[in-house]
Amino acid sequence: MTQLVPAVGAVLEAVLDATYEICHQGLSRAAYGGFWGAQLGTAWGRGHLRRLALVDGDEVLASAKIWSFDATLDGAPIRIAGLGAVFTQPAHRRRGAARELIERLLEESAREGADLALLFSEIGPEYYARLGFEPIATTVKQLGVFESDRYGAPATMIRGGEDRDLADIAAMEQARAAGYRFHLNRDRDLVHFAIAKQRLLAGLGAPGAREVLFFIAEEGASAAAYVVIAVNGNEWMLDAAGDRDPTGARVGAILQGLIARDPAQARPVISGSLPTGFLPPQVTIVGEQPSAELMMVRPLTSSAAAATSLAPGDFLYWRGDLF
Image (cartoon, rainbow, N blue to C red; front, top):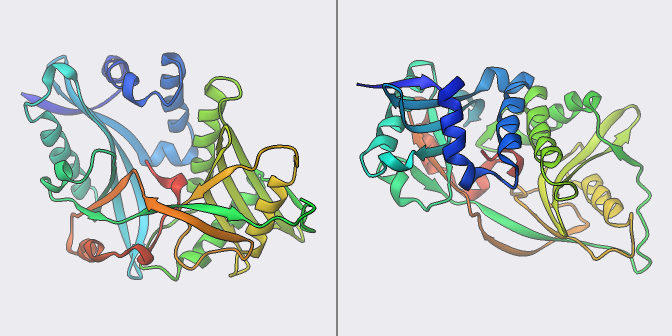
């Protein structure tokens, strides 16, 4: 008889061994396991992140991660069960193990108070549509940043972000998110988790392969704007950004300042998922394409039924929050 169990001990090692080849993100096998353990060691990870497995006796059939988020939909609080890293062990494929795992995970999540199941599919919509999930269109934008002919830095003081800035960042997030039908409630711990996850990937990977840029513009003694950028060679992915100024002008100034640090360097290729209505005056959208990770939702209670009607301009969801 199959059982749904926490992926710990020998079960976890079997899952990590099997998933490593397609999920390693450039890490060694040891670092891959350390990356998972370190995420669980954060304040947010301890209470909101789990890995479970469907087993039959001592045999692991399939596994997945579950994230628990607090969110807002049409002004009302909801709970989200985020489903990711669904994987069937090679010896047990095409026998319905993944479907059984997902249904049992969502049943358990609903009993624990989740209103909405959310996932990001990299395999297209067909498989998850058969399980009741509906796609929501998301895009990735290619961004251009205006620079003066002299390649000079703007007159905005910026510095590296610190833990003391996280509460200010969470407050910025709450203020901006109020204008959208759907958003995660990004408190201090979730903001820290998203940044820590990127730093862990950079720190555990090959030297120089990745970098994380976390910078703020300060006003008085507090953060007034911030950016988090995942750097991979000459490619910059804007993971998240915020600004007390509704125009986002300080975010644009931070980007200008970061680019101007080394005028001799080739200009980076910058991408991001800027939410509708947020475009700093120094930034232009030079291209756009569908996201490789397709957002899909499945209501678990009537409180989240409206999520299936979300249009691209209705939600605020940063790249750094993808799972």
